[in-house]
Image (cartoon, rainbow, N blue to C red; front, side, top):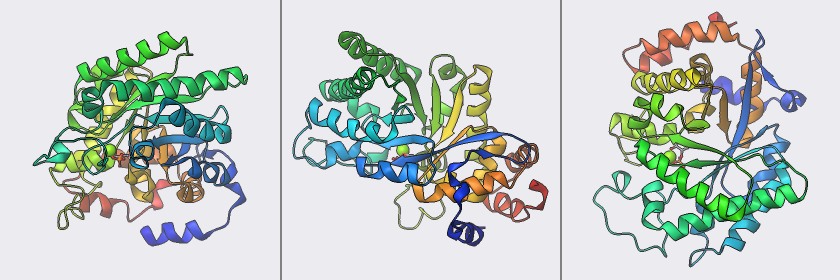
Length: 332
Ligand code: PEP
Ligand code: MG
């Protein structure tokens, strides 16, 4: 299937700017993961409808000290100048684990992936967290001054507990109201299994979920995503992972919220097929993958994908799921 994918990726297709609608009329949102302002133009050139994940670590990795609010705001403005009012999901700093920052004194940890990373690090550095939130809200205010309705969403990484989400949300609201900035949608990454398992509780309060399958795969299988031997076994075809995503979607749907996937699995054609069938609404991939993903969506029937995804959930192993999607003739 990966070879098929490469092949269709080669097809130069003007349809990349058109909507991604299945044969039976189900529309998907295809958006992009970006990591710097210079990635933004390629989103639109490739037909992305917006940004499903802005990894903001570049702001912190590139400098020798904490970047000022103004520097952070300028970087975000560069992106919204390109995107206009389109969706831009800004993930607050996901430092720690595989993403260290030289100037932040971070204690040595035996298990950095189970340590102070993501939102945990933000809570340990509250002023830095507030500064980042201020930059995000200032960018939305700037858009408002230009007469542009902001498409910025704020997303918190590595949320494991409802109390962490509430704490992050409350800090964001304090920062927003002090600035008198417009309200922005607030969501969380679903990348710790606990959050998926309790998605019903989160779904009543958040505006959206985005599944970080890179981390959730490593956490659900207890396999380090960077481990030289285990990384290739840390397989996003795992039915255990798929069940967690399915639980997340069911909980979200009950409360009228949407679920995206921004981990690498969204760019794999067979896994994208599973995800659509599970009811995921938004797929966020690197810009280069957008045209092929849209072609794939247009070539399948949503009703058929749903039926097949139910079977995927019942498989015993990732290899069984792979085998199930080898035959794609039942997807049209
Ligand atoms: C993920 O964990 O799947 C994700 C999208 O975030 P990152 O790869 O930046 O941890
Ligand atoms: Mg992650």
